[in-house]
Length: 440
Image 1 (cartoon, rainbow, N blue to C red):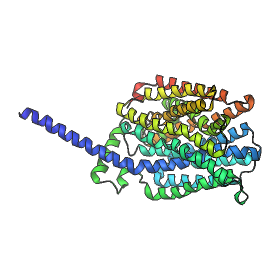
Image 2 (tube, rainbow, N blue to C red; image 1 turned 180 degrees about the horizontal axis):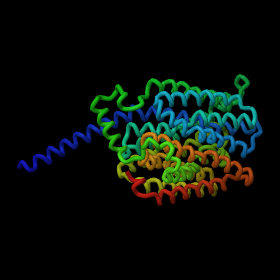
Image 3 (cartoon, rainbow, N blue to C red; image 1 turned 135 degrees about the vertical axis):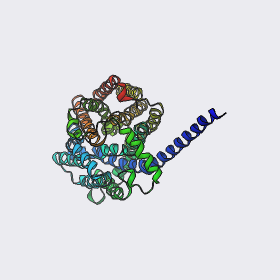
């Protein structure tokens, strides 16, 4: 039956090729993603540990809720200003050098927070921390486009971004314990020790980045020639038709799709940072006492989020579907925020916050499969940075607005309603996004 032999042989060859590709991408995944996750765990902890510092620092330095909210958010003004230049520099000099620089710089500045002694020094240090950290997150997103094609990227980004809840799972109890255990040691308050101790890993891991990361597959000595060729072929095919002209860096600022992506991301990030910056305060307001206990309870929502993020990321890649994988978690998160605002018990409040965290934190990794589906090269460097910087302005608006509303009303309920509303806005925007930009 010679007619059937070719199809059988062809099917066997195709299966072998797919098996080789799967093994290669698994090898790349385990080489890069766990290390990048570790970097982001440290980054996110140094960014949001101010939420725990607030429990002591605000009382010592006489900060109002509005002052704390403004200081927490002003990080993102520095982040916004240097985000695009930082990512363009990364595109030119390579991820290895630039990510190492970013981590070492933010580690030094984060440790220097122990010298904060006034409202304005608090604002200034948060602004400098934003400048230092600018470019890290979009730089990693850009970095993944050199190693994984679009249809494999949602899972990669979802696992990478599981660093956010992992940071909360381990960082929240750690921060609470440091503040209780070291309070008063050598004349320093617990919050000062927390900033100093949690800054050290950023500097050490930043040094490791320089020796561990490779800028692109061609430079990776741990890949075979066949594996390098597979990756380069897949990435080249993935980049066909994307926006990568020599003028992309300039024209990306006039690209309506990029600004629409920025709006979607702004809506989702509003919920994310409203939750992370105010979680310790919300948990304390529910009746939990003691910094370490607050840290333990605050970790529960992040455990739920970590599990859901990874599962939905795998589901989105397997089904090659993004729209409803984004919309459904966002709407569930919105409902959960409303429930938590009206919870009559600590148990219900924490349960609702857990659902909200799972919904909110799942949105970001799935979102990034949208803009990376139509941007590449220099255009991707500028476009991803622009989307991330504009979207992260929500990190300025969200904590400040919640702080102001809390000062005005004495409750976080109104702020939680605002977070729910923004998640609905983001869901509507994803719903009207053209299918060719959503599902790849």
